[in-house]
Length: 75
Image (cartoon, rainbow, N blue to C red; front, side, top):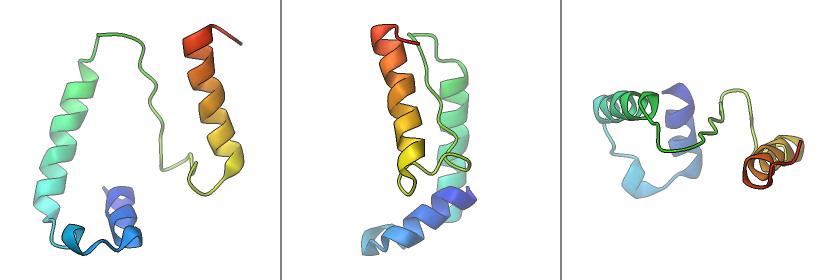
């Protein structure tokens, strides 16, 4: 939640400023429940608290490598 709220504040979009925290918390709970039961195919979870791909080129490269590995069986 702190990362999500920080990203919303960083973007500075007026229409996002009024999103209630209780709504975001509930949305996050529903998402975690859904993704926890996801079985439709391979799943790549990126921890944005650790991986700052929008700010660090090497983190973005790591994500691209993981996606390529899943798609093309490399590495």
